Image (cartoon, rainbow, N blue to C red; front, side, top):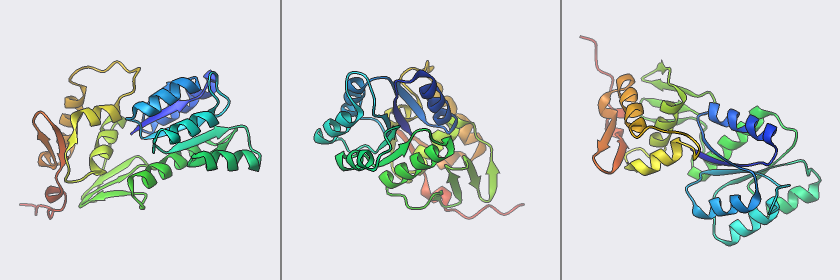
Length: 229
């Protein structure tokens, strides 16, 4: 999942970016409102974490302009402006949630997960497809009742696929949601992650559509476990 972080405080921004990346999100970090608005209009972002007191364009103006342009991406406001009137204004302009500073990182991540679930139409906190279970809060994966230990990139890849079981997810869309703008990524990085996932799960569970993308096969996920010989 791709998160746009808009925060001009270097120390706070670095801390938030680190926490989001550890939770297996791809993070793009911008420091001013005008650049943020351009990025939101360009699309390809799953969620925005937005400060209000920004250079070049205030965060409230970013929200107003983004919604007028038709952007539907969830926006989570982080701000030291904690008066009820400030919260009400931010929400009425189009923000989806509002978290005051200082904040607890665990609460921030919980709100991010909640907004992403709501945006994707998932009510349950755990994503399931047959015998496959993925818990974003715990960063845990189970296959047929067995826990799998996945690095954050493989976890993020599986999360993208399990959100659209049985449907083709383009290679471009997967890459966009796995890697941030500032990351130096090898051309075969996605292929490597897919290969490693297939070694830990039934290889047929993730099918490659050559030249297009990948599909999480529901029929494989729902197949009964093989009996021991």
